[in-house]
Length: 172
Image (tube, rainbow, N blue to C red):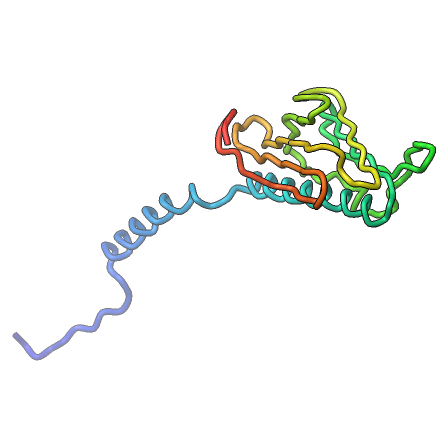
């Protein structure tokens, strides 16, 4: 051994390749677990819709006003209107109540009420009177073309709205 030490600057090619390989393995593990933008929009749509259902119930009860939630499954549109004593539909007056809670690409799969049963096409009208929501309703929303989604269940009295994730087609 000669007393001479060589000084290394930087990394060898082998060290860089090993590091890139490890980063690749970590990326393969992590990428499937990251939420896609559509999954985030589905979750946000479910929570915005739940908030709208609660808000209509609270406004009807506290304000002694009448509201109607119009769910059009053919046009994939949710709209809320205020109703006067003659039954005429008026603008709700609040921009929050006027917006469609669903993001683009999120569809209403079905609406279930006690009176109408399961509805998968057409329009469903849900009237909120001075007592709030008159009957339980269930709404299923999904990303277009996927099996997973969210089930929203709204109950009369108490403005209770439950949001549950649906993992696969036909199951909770």
